[in-house]
Length: 164
Image (tube, rainbow, N blue to C red):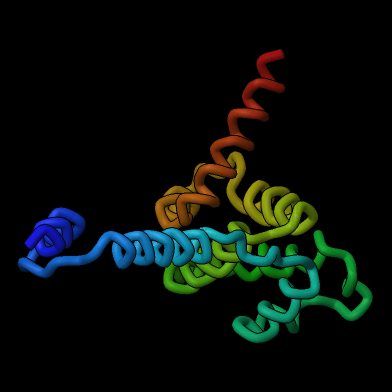
């Protein structure tokens, strides 16, 4: 009888009426914690070669815009994407603009320092900074949050420079 009372006191009731012994609960917590740490683990960064590979894979028509002598020069390689996005903006082809923004946004979230700077300067600033046309205004609404935040930081940086 004493053992049964001890067993009842050492169990945990979960929704649905099931009972778990403390060591099972501890194992579950350890597993849950391990699973979350694996989920939150930093993903590998993307560099220039990964950018070119993914650009060629997902946007072969843009990759053909890169001149052979421009390979290895990241700002010029990103510039091809800028030219393609600007062309889509000028044609009011917002479906293509959105596809480009999503692609660049995913790269931006995992980019190494070189690619991050290249995207911010050669793509975002070159494409949207200071632009006031209707097409550019609509395009800003299509930006993923990470790119929108980066563009806002660039704008505030240049506003501070202009004020001083």
